[in-house]
Length: 186
Image 1 (cartoon, rainbow, N blue to C red):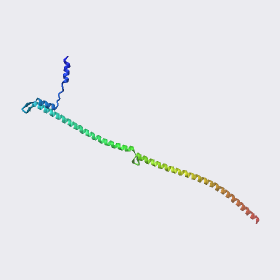
Image 2 (image 1 turned 180 degrees about the horizontal axis):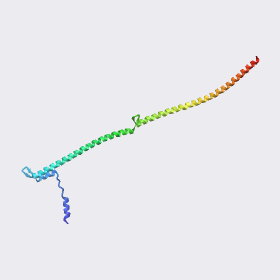
Image 3 (image 1 turned 60 degrees about the horizontal axis):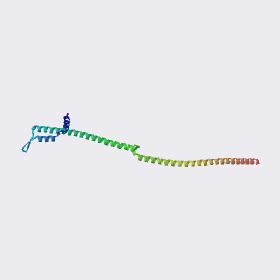
Image 4 (image 1 turned 45 degrees about the vertical axis):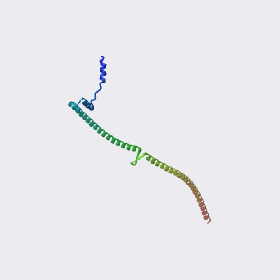
């Protein structure tokens, strides 16, 4: 029982040996023997190192191929997204032009230009309408005074006719009386 805690601590202190190519090369050189100025390496170790190097190269080539495939897919996606972005920006520009403008007689004009033209037209029409109303009022006053004058003249003409008719009748009576007098005298 006393040994169990020690075993647990011993396992924690053991470090994981790295199995990299550099570590394997160092291990092969360390385990090799020296002969004069040459190193003697066991063929099994050299074959194992060579196999591990080829495996690492094959693995890295697979990673490179996979990353190149991913890169080409990402580049294709980026191109697609860029074309979609350009089309969307163009659609947005057209939409903003349509929103900021009004189609008049088949031509797209800005709202400010449209408003300026419309208010100018309305202002001009109001001025013309005011001028015509003023002219109407003046004409109406002139017509009323002319009608009043005509009515007065008709009354005067009627009085003149009556007076003329009475004078004419008086003159005819006088003439008739004179004619009758002259007949009696003859």
